[in-house]
Length: 162
Image (cartoon, rainbow, N blue to C red):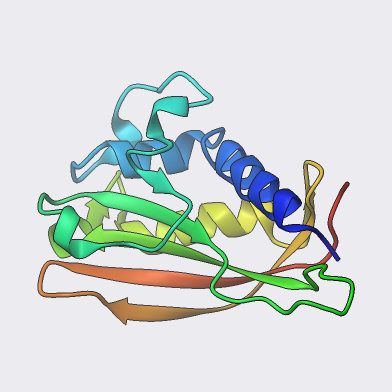
């Protein structure tokens, strides 16, 4: 169980952990066919929060240019009698312009799935800072519009700090 204040803190912590992963930072920052071959970026890449990483769902109307973004948010929740939020689902949406899906860093790949691989390696069934353990329980491929598609990770926050 957790309060709404801790829910806010947990999203900020999760975004802060993502920007410490060099490969993810390169995948979202470099709109080229070989993002990992680009120079390393100073970590944590705090400038990405609010520009490439957001704590709310994607809005294709406000994103006209080709880009890669990660959206981390709570799609729903349950509240018990004490007004505490129970075990919580977090969606992690990797939204990518279709023109940026295919990459080749010496080996062909699909950018959103490479980001999923990095997120899985970094977070699945691991304790993350003070927010507890994250379990990635599934994923969906989402058609956003003619320009963007997304991969949505279903993540369960099993325990909370605080």
